[in-house]
Each structure stands twice: as C-alpha cells, then as structure tokens.
Image: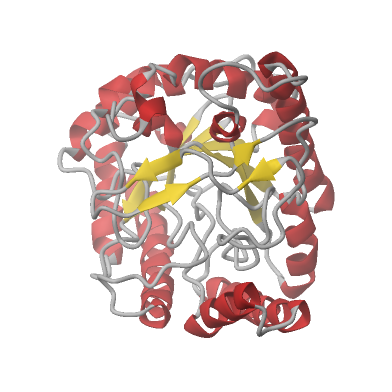
Length: 380
C-alpha cells in the first residue's frame, strides 16, 4: 500500500462564479443563476482533480460561503443568514496583509445549522467517479459565535455548546451517510489561539485546550473504526494569499492538537522554514494509539499561497525526509491548506483566481506523482 494522499478541500472559485456571487448579493442575479455557476464550477473541479490521478478528491467547496461559515450563511456577505445570528460578530482572524474575516454573532437560541456539508456533497457525488472527501468546520471555531463575556439571556453558554456539539456530530455523520470516504475537520483556529493578537480579543484568552476538549466532545462520540476516517486539519490560515499565524511556533500547538482522538491529521508544512524540526515534533507528539486508532500524519508538501509549482521530485524528497521522523505506516501527503477557503478570493499573488485555479491542479498533480515516487523510494 502506497503513502496515502488527499487534498484539504477548497479550490479557487472561477472569476465568473465570484462575479455571480456578488450579483446575487446585490439582487441582480437569481438563486438559480448562482446555483448554475456553482454546479459548473463543481463539475469542472471534480473532472480536473480526477485528471491529476488523485486517489481521493473534493468538489473544491465551490458551493460554500467559506470553510467556516457554510452552516450559517449562503454567502460571505451574509445573504441567507441562519436564524438567531447577526452579521456583526468578532473577527475570526486578522491576516498578515491587514485584511480580516469576521464571524456572525449569536443573538439567541437554539443554535442550529442552516446547511450541512452533506447538503453540498450529495449534489457533487454524481459528478465523480473517484471517492470523495468532505471538509467540515470544527465546533471550536463556531464556539466563537457566542460572546466572550457574559451569557445570552435565556440561552446559557453550556446549552449552546451542547447544541453545537450535536450539530457538529450530525455534520460528520451526514457526510459519511451521503457517501464521503473521509471527513476532515478544519482547525485553523488552533494555531491562531496562541498568537495573542491585541486587535483580536479571543486570541489572548488561552483557549487552545478549551478548543481541544470541545472538539473531543464530538470526536469521542465516534467509534475507533469511524475515527480512522475522521481527520483534523491545521494551518496558519490561507486567504488572499496571506496567513494569520505563521509566526506561532508549532511546539505551542502540536502537543495539544494530538490530544484530539482523530485518526489522521493534515498538517501545513511545505511553507515552514524549518521542516525537519516540525517533522520531529509531529513524530514525537502523534500517537500510535489514540483510543484505538493510529494517528496518520499527512504532511503538507504543497504551498497553495505560492504561484510557483512544486516538482514531483521535491515532493518525493520532502516525504522521504519526513519518514526519518514519522513512522512510514503513519505518513501521508497533503496540501498545506485549502487553495481558497473563502469563496471570495482574488488570489493577488497569482494575478487572478482563474490562473490560481490552473496552478492548483498542476500542484495537485505534482503532489500525486511525488507521493508515488516517495512510496517507491521508501518501499511502501
């Protein structure tokens, strides 16, 4: 069996789709027109990802508002927002280039998802001939919908967290029931929790362990057999070709992150300056037995924020080096992040989202080919 490889999830949305989203927000395009562009983008994503030779694919999240807000709103601008939410929530992140992304604010209970990831997956599965994975948002991210201080009248924090865990569990179970081969949980807030950005109050509250415990409240509802196909993704962000927490030392995150009882982890690494140090941290902190399941470590070998396309040989070499620190039977390959986690992203370093989209498939091809070469070199 060769080294496993899979994407994180998202791909740049075509410019035509992004223009249609803007028109839909402005009331000059219908929902049917938006749906048609989303369907076309999903079909193109699936066909082109299958052409890379990838053993497992995604639809590029072309229908979702973002990796974090798909359960809450139809578009990033807030069109079609779920009940009991307002658009003026706290920042999720402030990125290095100065732009920010904002979450909605919970105004009351009960909390419920408007859209499950499976609602999108069922539309894409008939377009695919290969197994599909589905990314879902971590309950830890959505816990930031609740005010940091005090409680909402009539809706205590603990009741919200209970409802949130129920919805997050349902999100994963529905994805598997719809036909997902794998489900990975986006946990980019994990690294950001150690940044302590004074402009962004939640990052200074030492919430990492709280996040880990909350996520385990959901993950531990699944059997070891189920958890083998439930992953955790970590990265320092990836939006508009910028990051939000790249300066945070992985040593502050990984010991806590691997406490989560997931079966595999997708770990940004291609853009790290000292890869071998992080490979060693991954090897030292990942567990051969996480309550009945070995933790497989998919190391990032592709940088979605850099327009330069990696070579298959470079991917091979990175994986061969990683195998010096991570057991071969628990080694995998992935991309550092989704290529465009937010639906509106002009990919400024690339020049356009359409060019970035072409580059993404070239990079995925390099990942697939390089992983095959590494498998041969390592005798796997």
